[in-house]
Structure formats: C-alpha cells, structure tokens
Length: 298
Image (cartoon, rainbow, N blue to C red):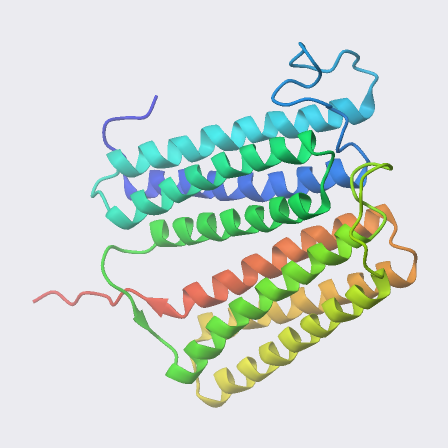
C-alpha cells in the first residue's frame, strides 16, 4: 500500500519504474512478433477458449504471448500506482496527476487494441497502430518522470528560439521515422505469424522512404549540434544532442546491416530497441532544453 504522504523523491522512483516497464513491454511485444508468436494465444483475454493460460508449457509461441500479457499486467499496476502516487505526493502537482492519468488511458487503449490485433488475426494496420501507441505512451512516461524530477514551478527555455523550434521539428521528424519504420515492418517477413497478412507494398520501396526519413533526421541533428556549439548553449543540452547523434548513427548502421543481410530476427530485435533509444533521446533533448529557475532567497 502507498503511504498517505509521498515525498517527491519517492514519486520519482515510481515514475521511473513506470517508464522502464513501458519501455520493456515494447521489447517484449516485439519479441512476440519476431518469434512468430502473435497468434500463440488465439483468444483474448483468455489465451485459448475457456483457458486463461496456455494448455501446454511446451507450446513456445503460446508461452511467449502469455508472458507478454503478464508483463502488461505489471505495466497496468505500475501506471495505477503512478496515478495514486501523484494524489498523495506532497506537494501535490496537477501536471503530474494529468500525465499519470494519460498513462492509464494509454495502457487501457493499448490493451483493447492488443485484443483487436489478436481477434483480427494480426491485421498489419492494427499492429502498426499498436506499436505507434506504445511509443506515444513511452513519450508520456518519459515526460512524467522528467517533470517529477524537476522542482515545482514554471519552466523557461535555456536555448534560443530557433534551436527550440528545431528541437520540436526533431520530435516530429523522429515520429515520422518511427511511422515509416512500422510500414516497413508491416510489409516485411516478420509479421508475427506465418499466415499473417502483410501490407501490399514493395519492401524495398518503403525501406527507401524510411531511410530517407532517417537521413533527414540525421541532418537535422547535425545542424542542431552546430547551432548549439555556435551559440554556446548549456552543456546539458549539447550532451543530450550528442547522445542522440551517437544513438541515431548506431541505429542507422543496424538498419542498413539488417536490410542487406536479409533482415535476420536478432538484428531486427536490436533495431527495435534502437528505435526506442532514438525516440527517448529525442524526447529527453526537448525536455532538458527548459528548466525551472532557481529561486533566490529574498
């Protein structure tokens, strides 16, 4: 049970656990798809008709899908605790409560969408929506944790207006990279089941569009770094941009390698983790570009 009063530090830990658990379920969900276990459990919310759990432990696809559902239960508990924690946190902050409720809404929508994915035999458009929604929930969770770690009060930007605008464009560009990446996946061989429907698109064509989106994002990151150094922006922002550059370059290298080696499952899995890392890095870069001014005692 939660105490009646929660310190800001304790609530920070709760939001960190929620954010990590939401990132983990992105990886476990990808594992379900990459192992062809998307229909390991053929029913929802039960695994099979009349059974909550797989009928046989030796049924690997069913067990993988079932474990993913168990992780969803952990995530659900984590976001509920985040909401309750925001209510008893002292001092209480409205922005933290609203963001924590956003997590609950996102997870509920994700559970419903996940059920539809199973019941509609891994419809590629629903699978794409499932991943995009996961990334939006991660965004919510990262923002919640960041705000929980900063002092109370309004923020002010610590970068110039043009850099602030560029950071927002980076967020949009990263979202485009994620979206085009889901199109490539939905058109490729790893759809979650051998019989699952794919998008009727040429993989090489959509992969080319995805790579162009990545190159655009990379160019924008390099330009942002140049402006940050030229304007003498705070080190915390330059460091966050540098981390984004390293993660993005590594992610691009994995992407090209997997494409030219026949998209092996292991590399695809690494690429999904990389996509998550790029997304979080872009979010963090935007967040550290503003801070709460330190109050000077009168």
